[in-house]
Length: 67
Image 1 (cartoon, rainbow, N blue to C red):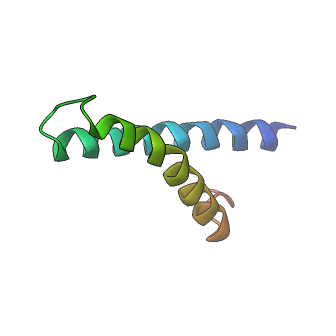
Image 2 (cartoon, rainbow, N blue to C red):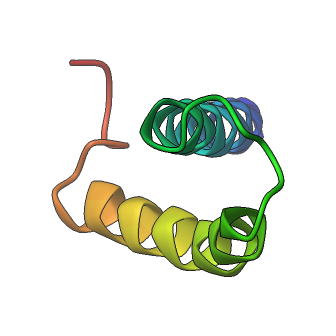
Image 3 (cartoon, one colour):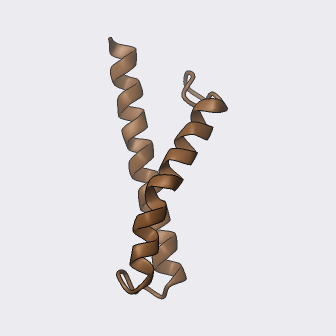
């Protein structure tokens, strides 16, 4: 039970960090204009980027033990 809880915490932290880094990259790219026309693009790509990164992290065993 403890392993599963720790795994969920690490997964949630990874989701938060992925979203924050994508948002920061978006803000830098579009000159700190948060929700212009590019805001729709950010919202559409965010779930795809999160899902892709989490699948790759799991596939490469980044969630297997501490590294």
